[in-house]
Image (cartoon, rainbow, N blue to C red):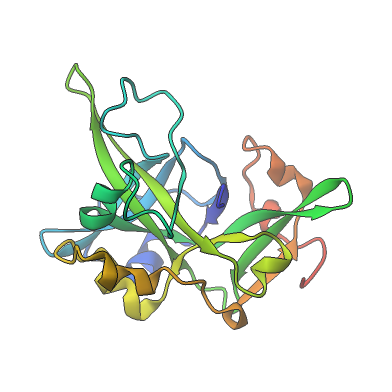
Amino acid sequence: MCGRFALWTLVRALMEEFGLEEALYEPEPRYNIAPTQRVAAIVREGGRDRLVGMRWGLIAPWAKEASGSAPINARAETVAEKPTFRASFRRHRCLLPADAFYEWRKVGGGKVPMLIRMIDQRPFGLAGIHGTWKGPDGTEVVSCAIVTTTANELMARIHDRMPVIVPREGRALWLDPEVQDPARLQPLLRPYPASGMEAFEVSREVNSPSHDYPELAEPVRGPF
């Protein structure tokens, strides 16, 4: 699964990295993004790639309220079929920019937090799906989930799942709302090559979502 990630790259650099034309949301640097929080997401609207804000945790259209639990992840193997996800997968895909994500490795009787990032330390795009929940009073909440897949060779030493990282050459296809055939999208849902990634043990302070500061992303041991 993917339950925490970080994004500290500033908006101007994100726009250059992802070829964005507009930023409707300007996130502050975050080092411990947790479910239910507002996250930055890239969507294609009217032929333009834009940075917008969404709630992390995909609220089903039939949910009675927006405050309940909502899935933060969708499995690549079933995202095209499950009722909660299939409409979003076909028509409402997004990229969640990130500089790193966290996963917990089992060690003895406990777990150790690990930070995973690109070797070149560039931001990357997590595959996401999104939807708009509408309340009976007219309230609208845009929310999202991160698509996960099986682990690559590096991640397999930490956890059996990892978020889908969409390669640069696949971003345009993933964001294109005109593409609705799952067969065209499934090839993007593969594990990212382990050779382009690295992992480090980080402070257990990251265990608490109330902690959010740069030191959380600093290795205490590594590389793994």
